[in-house]
Amino acid sequence: MRIGELAKRSGLSASRIRFYEASGLITSARKANGYRDYAAQALWTLQIITSAQGAGFSLDEIRQLLPASPEGWQHEQLLAGLKRKVAEIEVLQKQLEQNRAQLLVAIDSIENRPEDRACTDNARMLMERLLEQQAT
Image 1 (tube, one colour):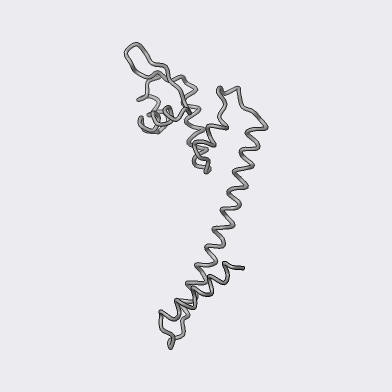
Image 2 (cartoon, one colour):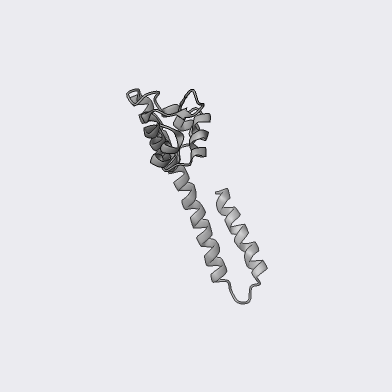
């Protein structure tokens, strides 16, 4: 199929498809007239790429996991890649929760600042408190 049809069926722009091709994630054959011709497998591959990116995989990670053909999945390699991504997400979640907690402390300190304390002094105290928390 030509790139216009593949773009329509995949919901991706033609430039995005060309980018994935230039990145080595999909392939096409060139017809005599110079047009790209994509196999039906290209649509399947684009759907996997889109889903994997939505799950947080980089293009390099996707490239390592994608089989050369739909029948070429390597069970252990795929499973290890998915587990590795889950572990990375868990680390990110922990970091985000710590960031959230720090922001909530900052909000609380600002909202409940004693009226007799200047905002600058309150900010200084807050920063010292946050730095102490980071050190522990």
